[in-house]
Length: 267
Image (cartoon, rainbow, N blue to C red; front, side, top):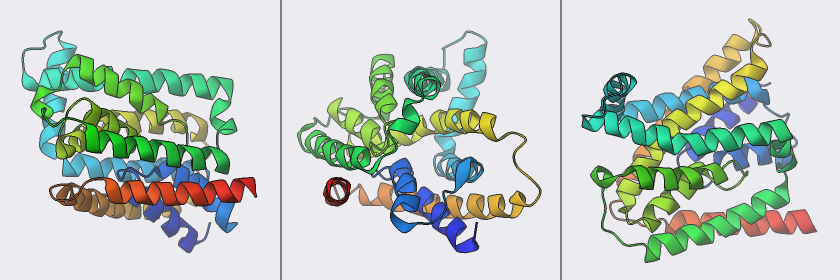
C-alpha cells in the first residue's frame, strides 16, 4: 500500500472510531467508493491498536481503576468501585463477543459489507440516536451504572457488528435511553470500547498471525501512530463539545451520508 493510502486509512479509523458515525462503515466504503486497494486485516489490527491506545490514555484514571478492580475480581471479590466497574465492563462485552463469533462462523459478517446495508444502518440508527438524545431522561451518571444497564448496553453494542451502525453511536443511544447524561453516556461507551477493541483485535489477529512480514512493519508503525493521534484528537474534541452541543451534528451527517449511499446503491 502507498503511504497516502495508509495515512487515509489511519485517519478515517482514528477519527470515526469514537464518533457516533461508524468507523467500520467508512473503512468498508473507502475501497468501494475510491477504487483504492482494500487495506487488509493486518492494517485493520494496526489501526485498532492505535485507537485502543488513544482511549486508554484519555480515560486512564478510569482504566487504572478497572485494571486494579480486575485483580480483585479475579480473586472473587467485588468489594471496590474498581472491581464493580470491571465486572460491568465484562458483562457489557459478552454479547458482542458471542454475536461476533456467530457472524464469523456463519460468514454473515462478509455478507453484510455492502453499500446498501451501510446506507440503511447509517440512516436508521442516526434517527434512533436523535430520538434517544432528545427524549431520553437525564437522571444518571457513570457512578449509577448497574449490572442490568451494563448488560442492556452490551446487547445494543452487539448490533454494532452490522456495518454502518457505529459501536459508539449505538451504545451512546442505549445510554441516553437508560437516562445517562450526554457526557456520561459517551464516557461509558468509550470505556466499553476498550475490552471490545481488544476482543476484536484478538479475533482479527488469529487470521493474520504468521502473515505479517518484516516489510509490513513500516506500514504498521505508520497506521498505529496516525490512528492514535487522530483518535485522541477526535475523542478530545467530542468530549469537550458535548458540554454545550448535542449529538445532532452527527445525526445530520449520518442521515446525509445514508441517503447518498442508498442513492448510489439503488441507482
